[in-house]
Image (cartoon, one colour):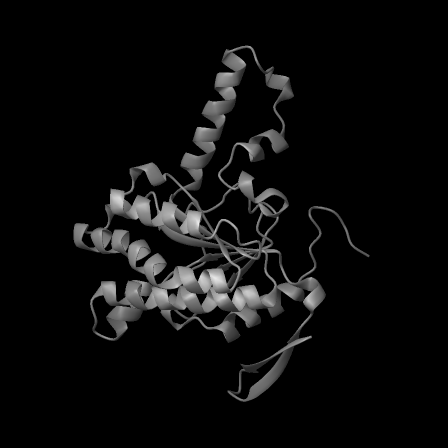
Amino acid sequence: MFSWLNNNQSGEPEKIELDPNNIPAHVAIIMDGNGRWAQKRHLPRVAGHKQGMETVKTITKAASDLGIKVLTLYAFSTENWKRPTDEVNYLMKLPVDFFDTFVPELISNNVRVNVMGYTDQLPKKTQKAVADAIEDTKNCDGMVLNFALNYGSRAEITTAVQEIAQSVQQGQLKPEEITADMISSHLMTASLGQYQDPDVVIRTSGEERISNFLLWQIAYSEFVFMAPHWPEFTADLLAQAIYEYQHRKRRFGGLTK
């Protein structure tokens, strides 16, 4: 069993134990609250993004140590381009700085980088940092650190439908041959194989919405919403979320005895 100290409602530390046989294979996190964390401290929003990058490093190592197979992090959405130009420019530099400093640790922890999203629309330097990190970690066969970067689920599903429709138009496929598995195979998570659908989705900062994230893949995911902002998120809080997940009954639309 994995043992962790957790603060209960009275503020007293209590010991929680995770069942190593029930660790979620795919954990997806909506990393929310960087800006609010900074504003609470009278800092510029970019300071929250910088601290959030350090949290990514901490949680990546913690997830790998727990035996999680895939950790998907919602880093930048297709809607985030609407933010102020200075903030967007800073966010585009973050992957460059992140991979420049963290790839050696990823390799030492046997973690492979994967990136899904419309990366061809990113600045050239960001594209290069992403491509280099994928190449440098390609031989790692431990946990997959999967970044959703310039990703939006509606756009992803639209692209998948267009690809399938093209096959129908070309006479390679009949409409009645379209299946759920086929649709999944055209989504950006297809390369994750058996782990493409998250077991649990965690959202920080107290917000309780999906924000256009993995709409198809989370059909039967468990959700854990947590109050701390992402820069405050810790390995202990990750363990707490998994502990909550382990005490859910997953029925997948059926019944359990």
